[in-house]
Length: 225
Image 1: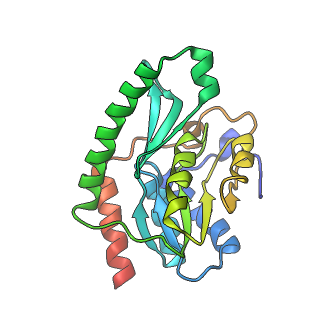
Image 2 (image 1 turned 45 degrees about the vertical axis):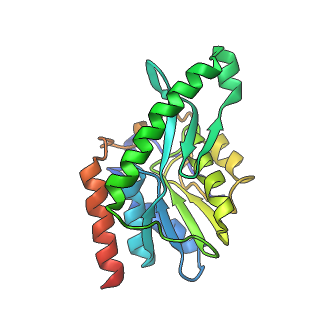
Image 3 (image 1 turned 60 degrees about the horizontal axis):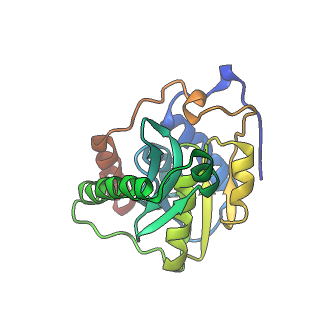
């Protein structure tokens, strides 16, 4: 696994630049025929778009929703993914003494948002089949890794040939954990101390639903042209 330290003065300009840099690492390490790039919306889509473009690969989304602690939503107690998959951080849940009822209520809220995004982003398009293909699962970074973990565990039963996790920046210990879950992990930048994903971008403004739809439409046009 390639690792490097990035100083504050060398952070990514934005998600597009991060995707362009990540694409070079993916190109060097993934030579599989006809790979499929899957983005975790929303922030993973601009990154994945650049990787898919560099690989001349199809781009699709794989919907995962973080389960955030009420009042502290950035603190992930778990995540859910398409296919009724839920991954929970049991250690954190026990530490915070959270009830199962609260976790179920948070899950129900996020399931509604997952369904909304599925309908909005796909606009009637069916998911691209992953069976027997190398899938490159991309986000804009990994802090706890809960969303990515849910994505991997939801994808495995669909029969991909390989699952490659690729992110521009991540906590080193999280990248290490994913080596037991994914077939390959590409984390070109693993700062120490890590902090938060957004700390390693000059522009980490929220990716909008409109941007996601436009990038998916553009990728579909380019791959078929």
